[in-house]
Image 1 (cartoon, rainbow, N blue to C red):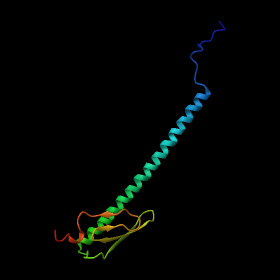
Image 2: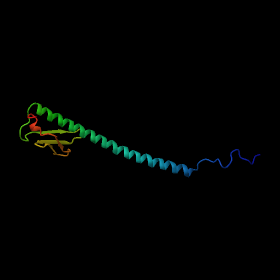
Image 3: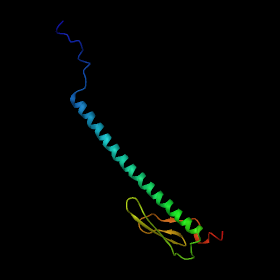
Image 4: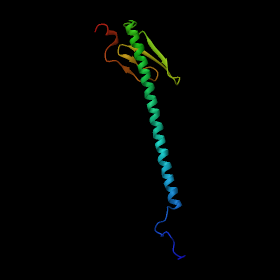
Length: 118
């Protein structure tokens, strides 16, 4: 009975080539997922920073309105910088906050100079 194997030849394992192909496919999938996650994370961080800047601008604007610092003309500016060192300057006019620098334009629903009349 020396000639017979304990395991039939139909129950063989994976070949080295199959394992290498599987590992390569897995590595490609993981690399693609890492790139997508990295881009998504950057987008989330940029969006959060923009939201923080908009909130800060709204705070400054509301403080000026509450102190009655808002004149009939565009006579004040709001300037601030981000954690990354980007500087922003916003000028207020009749339409609201006008884009200056690289921040997205913010328009207000009502004219801020007529807020007292309402």
